Image 1 (cartoon, rainbow, N blue to C red):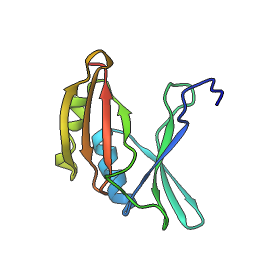
Image 2: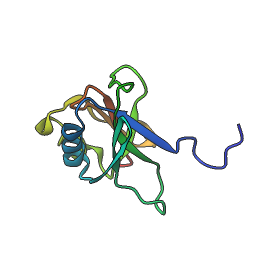
Image 3: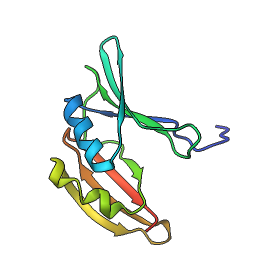
Length: 125
């Protein structure tokens, strides 16, 4: 595979309740969403800018999409992941593990969202 950039260019987080998930992620990550309806699929796109690094993604409500704690883990970039993980429980989620060092690669934390997905946070400090 020839690749001129990072391998991921989009992600979708499956949800059972789109409004509850938007409220949770909006509070934890301090972000806004743009709603998009496509036939039998509803999406809430995370605020994104093509001029900034990283990838875009959305919350996804669809019959064939099921939240899971056992599959792929998406990590959101943060300035200090202790801040975001500190907002999780107050907004209905639970902490899998708090901020911990991964040596020269920075710090990570993981949480369970309101939909049953295991999500990660990553920061350099």
